[in-house]
Image (cartoon, rainbow, N blue to C red; front, side, top):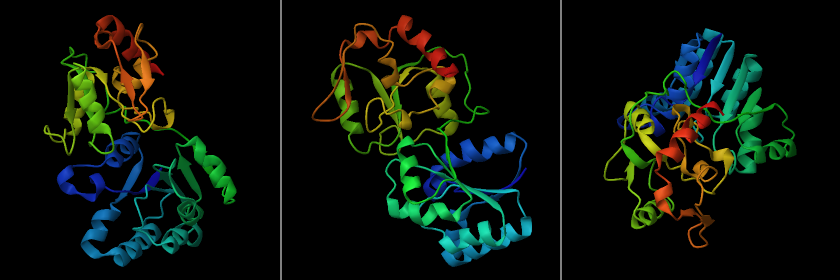
Length: 283
């Protein structure tokens, strides 16, 4: 299939931060599945030539390349709605947009952008009735996954008890501090931590050599925010481990809203962590 791939090549449009999640998990996967990809890095083009030029260029590329599908991952308001409608309706190209963070998207945004595409994808169950409310029904309910061509089991021995990769926004730093105060050895990577960012290859190795990887989502047990990268390498996020760890109590802290763990010695026992990792890989 010939796909016009419209997404950011770099993380948040910043080349110094390396390739984006979309690049690693959408583009690379589609390419290795054998599709013919026309790459349209809208953020870089907009930064270099301006928003109007970039929008015009997308219409030109769509008309010239005549793709079977335009696959888009919107960021904010880089596109004119009229541009996307022209590709969908004027050129008659099948278009689909993957909506990220659809669990908190405002109704006005959904009403503006969804009709610009033939199809949209959401990972949020809670968003389905909201699309219905605006009269849009071409919605595909999917889930987050990862590029299994990249994320793989490396069969390396454990190096870390507990790890976290991500920025320290919200209450994440406080949660990490609480775990460390409880005597749990937590290693962190990401912009804002002393260790700095981990590269894609480094991240995959860290996941492979971690007994437990923290998934600090907004709420314990929120499956819509589950991190697929971790079980893909037969390790496991901490919130899921609560289902497997015996004699461990978990409660939702009223002050922080985050799961707090007691009896920490149970967390890093091989008899607990090793069976749970492969189970996560197959689910």
